[in-house]
Length: 457
Ligand code: NAD
Image (cartoon, rainbow, N blue to C red; front, top):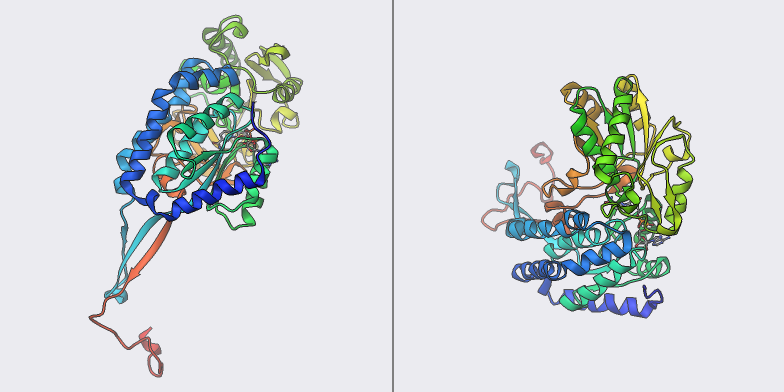
C-alpha cells in the first residue's frame, strides 16, 4: 500500500533538509559521489531477490526480464564510476586571437536538489538509472516512484532510507495528489518519466519556478520491415521487443509497417515465433507478464476492437491477462493507431512503397524510437533523413536502451532531454563558463574615448 496522504509540510521539510545538506558542499566531493554510487550498487546486489519479488508482484515480471531490464541498471553505475573523474574535469575552451591574454574553461556543477518521478513499467530501472546521473553530478535527490507499481515503490522507499540519509536521497511515495503537492515546490531540476499528457502538467508546474526539466515520454514507435532482411532474425527481435513486459515498454515497436511482398510470410512467422517463445498457453507461461492495472487492462481490451485479430486476442480480466495479439486490416483512424498502445497488441500494416510508410510516420507526433529492418544502406539513409525520432535502431529493437554511450531521450511529443552514461551526468549538471584574464597586459582599444577606434573592431 502507498501512503497517499503526505502533507505539504512533510514534503517541504524533506526538501528543506536536502537544501541544507547540499549547502554543506559534501555532495560536490568526488570521492563522496563515488562512495554513494558504490552504495547504490550494493543496495541492488544485496536486495536482488526482494527487487525481483516486488516486480513480480506488480507486473508478474519474469525473473529473466527483471534481471535483464531492471537489475542490469548496475551497468550504468559501473559506467559512471569508471568515467566520473574524467566527466568532472573542467574542459578547456578555445579562445580567438583577440582574446589571447584570456583562458576559458567550462566547469560542470551540480544543479542542487533534483526531483525524479518514475513510471510503473520498469519501476526500478526508471528511478535508479536517473538517480545514477543525479549522484554522479553531485546533487541531492527526491524520488517519487509510480504508485501503480506499489510493491516496487514500497521497496524503493524502504531500501533508499536504509542505505542513504534522507537529507541526501529520499523517497516520497504517493499518487497523483501527492505528486501535485511535490510539484508545487521548487526544485533545481525535475526528471520525469511518464506519459506526454502528464509531461505537460510537470512542465507547467516547473515553469512556475523556472526549473529545468527532462521529460522522458512515450509515443507510437514505428517498425518498418523491408524485404532485404533475414526474416527469422527479424521476427525473433520484433517479437521479443514487442511482447517483453507484455508490451508495456516505452520503446516497444508500437505498429509494424511491412513491405506488402512479405506480409504473409511475416505474419506466418510471427505466429510461429510467438508459439516458440510463449507456447500454446501464454497465460500459463511464467515468461509472460501481466497488465499493470484494471484501468490499463480495460483500455487495452477496448483497443482489441480495432481491425481483425489474426493471432491471440484472448483476455482474462481477473488476471489482467491479454494474450500476445496481432491485428490485421487496421485503418489509421482506428483507436489502436491513434494512441500509444503500451500493451501486447501489434497492428500490422502493409506498404507497397516506402514513401507511403514514411508519410504515415510523419503524419504522427515524433516517436521515441524508430525501427527499420533492412540491410539496404540507401533505404536506411533515406529513413534517417526523412523522419525524426528520439532514436533509431536498425535491425533490432529495444537494445539501444542498453548502450550507455548513446544518449537516450525523445524529441517533440516524445520528450525533452536525454540520459544514460555521460548524458545522465550532463542532464543533472549546469555547465558553468569561466573566463579568466591576466594582468600582464591591458590594451586600450575597448575603453572610452572611442574616437578613431571603430576601425579596430
Ligand atoms: P503517467 O504519466 O500516468 O505517470 C507517471 C508519473 O506521474 C507517476 O509517478 C504518477 O504518479 C504521476 N502522475 C500521473 N498523473 C499525474 C497528474 N495529473 N499530475 C501529477 N502527477 C501525475 O505515466 P505511466 O502510466 O506511469 O507511464 C506510461 C507512459 O510513460 C507511457 O506513455 C510510456 O511511453 C512512458 N514511458 C516513457 C519512458 C521513457 O524512457 N521515455 C519510459 C517508460 C515509460
